[in-house]
Image (tube, rainbow, N blue to C red; front, side):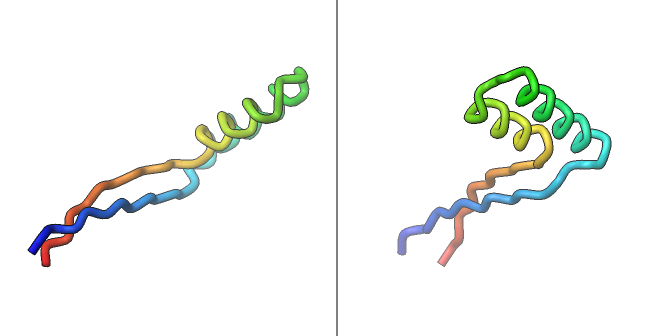
Length: 59
């Protein structure tokens, strides 16, 4: 049998102070006329804790 590999993506909000900093940074970038395609993903990366895990299931 061949082992199967999988990927798990966990997305959860960070603690409140860091989430407020990310939200404020995104709002400031939009207020300063930064492109939305750049400001919003960067703010989301600051606000959210994203973990990508590879795992192998043994059969």
